Image 1: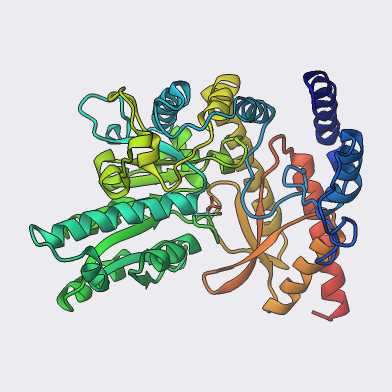
Image 2: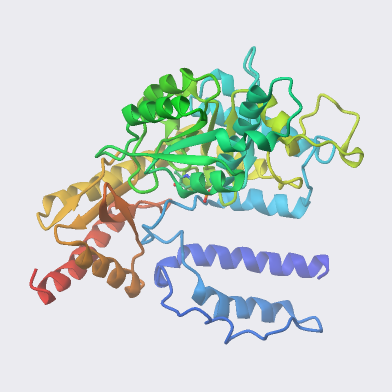
Length: 478
Ligand code: PLP
């Protein structure tokens, strides 16, 4: 493709994106297809000869789009938001066009320096403790953009493991792996599965702590479990607290968990705020960030609740040396002479890194903190509206405390009719939601996700839910 073709098709693609966004409601929110649909439509081998780009775009609309779930559709209420916006897409386009791989300061000084600046803007916007802000006086901390919250959890756990092993090892020369059997991590039953995955990968034990009826980690049980494990000769080294659990958007009490962690010197406290951490941009939500001063690390995804497209997950640590000593390798081919420049390859798993800070910078500048606050407040108000509608109908119940954009509800029947309700709604293609188990009960998660969501979207959704529910209640004489 030459530059003139790129100009022509580039404009067409932008027009397509605008059209897509404007007319998205004409599409079903999710397809009703069976696995293997695309195999029937595409050849088994890549073409030997170049094909006209026009044909590729046509096939995109006719073959790929029918299999797309539209996460930016006003009737998409599943999972958590995918976080997207025009400024972010434009920032990402430029990052793709530049194509610089920012693993070290020398490999792309702008990427390295913008990441530092944006991570400090972000930390200050969320009101994080100064320890996480790299330009705060006396700070040893800082942040880096990772690909996902799962990566943030893993990277934190690896750093915590390295710190704990180093303490256990002292001056001895035994291999680090000798200490693995004694290491034990803790997370609540409501913590995200990425914690379990991280402990699996790191070959350390995980103790699951029960949650209370609000979905918050039981701190008394955590304290007891740690004490029992210490008595049994184990080394508690990592605790994950969650602010905004996946199942019910519950907020663990970081202060109380932090106090327990402080009683055992080797414990690293990680706070996972993949979705809800972003809400700390609102002063009124900071009641839930109290206690972050106890945390060794904290993550939140701007690609969930800060209008930034995937991938972008922010991780801050209290002491960047903990990351560097766990992850630093330094072959000659990566060295450079600018020793004061930040090399972000020491802050995560991959060597190569996309210029993700660019899209986040575009988002901060085009919305401003006020614009981002308004966006989140709108989601909160709409979730409250939906909660109110559900609570007013005695056939339904709300199961979680609604603090942000997620409402977990169910019909006051057994689980099976609720399974049916969700399946029938999702098969209709008109709305999309996902299930969860919250406090031992099957619930339907209704999460406000659309950037420009309005009360009309919520009212229409509730009307549809009631229609489907009425049919099920009638057909099954419930
Ligand atoms: N932590 C929490 C609380 C989550 O809700 C999620 C996903 O929704 C994750 C971690 C994993 O996020 P990611 O898909 O970025 O790995």
